[in-house]
Image (cartoon, rainbow, N blue to C red; front, side, top):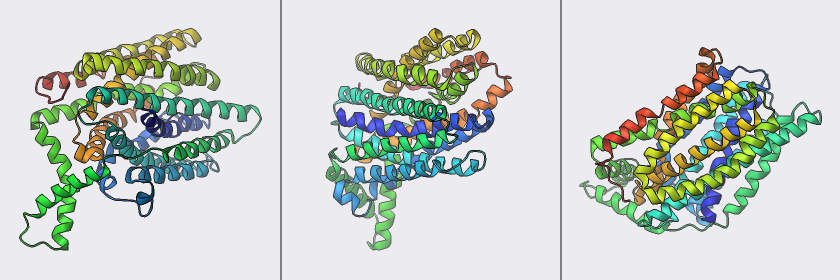
Length: 437
């Protein structure tokens, strides 16, 4: 579980860079809400990382894979790219270099999405296949780690930016990125102490499936072996998923995953802009949204993992979806009341409770669906579909607020309604879904 916590931390930290930090950096350089919202399209790479997940699952990093392990070599390589990207950000100006900044942000997003493929596979492979309660527990611990990386990274980015700003530095955000680069270095060093498991067994099963397809060829040569490898790498994970579930159930399942967190994504994309517009300072946001939010998220995530274990994954998905929608309405109340610190703290607490429960249930749910022979590919496929819904729709969140003439109260009511279609999809297939509870 300590290892899983580290995986979650490494996975969550980059979201601070291309989410809160980038958004506020652009906001404080007088860029519009719409521009900031559309800049969030860089999160779209999380929605399509399943496209290269089969390659990450099978290809080895020269030298590095043999030295530290296949999974870890991919993560370390991506961490180095994120580190280099932060160094580039530290010398850029949003007014003069907007598109270059977004391009570097895209590089961070691609690296983060790629390492997530391996991180999720490495997490799942730490748990034995028949230990579903341990899987739910590991999902909770990873979410704790993810939120720790996200919240602590958010606190550090906001506090250091405010500190350098008060000291009179005009490039206060750029300096804060150098501080954040140190976190990338420290977490990468910690990763070297994590062992990998089951890599030989996984490789054997993959090769066995490749050979089954290769035996269909009359002539075995280099060309037929390449075709068999490509089939085993790209097609077999999909065949496995649709074989386990009927076509109708698979479509219903994918629709549910696609739609489930759209409302939360709309809220999350605009939340820090909302806090700033109703009068909270960067320090207020760091304290209530990031600092206190981190502590409450850890507590609620562990409780959420317990609830998911006790009530079963399917029931947990329904309950978390309803709670998530209801808590979005608290932001409407905050919008109508104004910059009340007490209400702000209470709203963040309730939202963290719902988000933690929903995330734990969601991660455990899709983790229980994957075939261990193609862990990285299948989890990446399911997670990417969920991210696709959040990213493709939420990128228009700023435009929606502008269309509503800045009526944040109505905006948050709309985000609450967005969860309903996903729950209807899950309701339609719940009796046919094959999941070991």
